[in-house]
Length: 300
Image 1 (cartoon, rainbow, N blue to C red):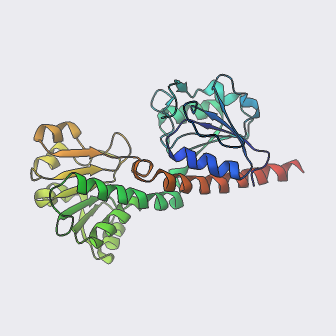
Image 2: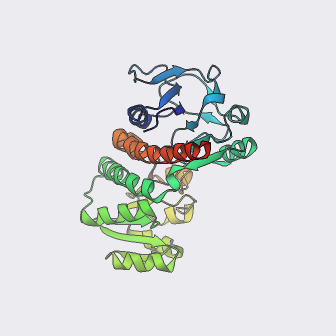
């Protein structure tokens, strides 16, 4: 249980609603910032403005999966309030206060360092990333069906990257009857792709591999689907980029070439927000309980 913990949940999308529900079930006291347009009420949760909250009493801060943008603004779909996270806010919190986010960026890293507070990136955890790959794959299938005029079965699919998401995507599209090729840089990943019964290739061969591709799915967060790669694709190719913004695709050139390219980070929050929120909530509860236990142990 999280009895006695005071937690600030700042902004977010529908995934945060499941996080809020689960935390209140654990008897935590929540301050909800950026939720004034939310009709639903949660027992043990109070809607507040960021400039009205007493951060000196906050034990933990939970940000949305994207954290902040490059200027520190926190996005929320339940508020029109402009919410910016600053080091001044963080320094008001107790020294043990941790900030939980899905991912980070240079701005968030900078304010955390300046405030001398710890940031926990949930998506760096293997368990979260693996669980999250399930709704990501389902969303990718949905997009592939919506934006093509051919079946997945029998199509030539290229998956870039064999991380937690790439592995799930490749395996699922193979199970749907696609001819799946998977690109990787590391020899151990090439070996794993072979063991999975998929066709491996090194990424330096990508320009050659895409000559007959129907569907290209990227999971690598650096520009890998370059103009040269896109120039060699058939005109009907669909690119689905699952990497975090700005993705790994030259979207400008894809549009110029007339190839449909979709940037689709955060698919779990779109296609299955309740399931995605439950994944985050379960891990958050575990981590918060560990933090609470440590503090209680030190106070004895």
